[in-house]
Image (tube, rainbow, N blue to C red; front, side):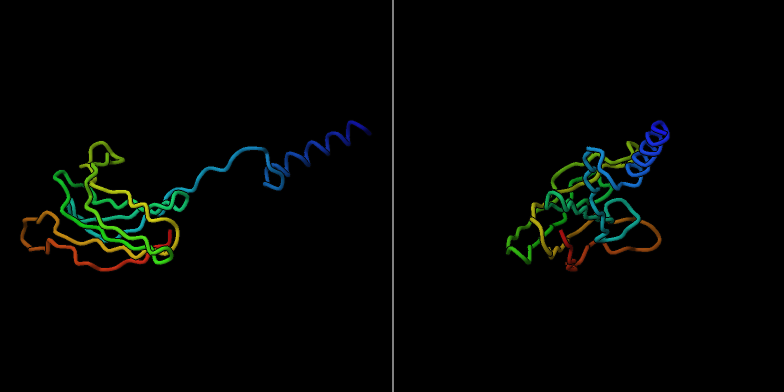
Length: 145
């Protein structure tokens, strides 16, 4: 009878750990940054993304697949704290795929709260049969950090 009770207790413990009812003493992984597209685009340098890192209170703005330096400007204001700033995208960021062009970016230390963000400026023009605008207009985005 004691062996049967021990077996039932072992099975119950394994089930409880498997269902997450009892902690096993391991730390939970930090959540991945939330990626938001600020300006869509298919050609190099036209797409702009923002990676919101809620744990660190930062937003990383990336202009995708651009070899030459970026000419974009990013302006932001934290609506909760009043902190604000503006910057270019000076950092060269290695792409996830080594065969792609690098990204250009900047990390904005905005702090937590609602953040109004504006990205604007020229990007490399594309040549082809259909002319495309080569300027991102300053359209505001509201992000929660």
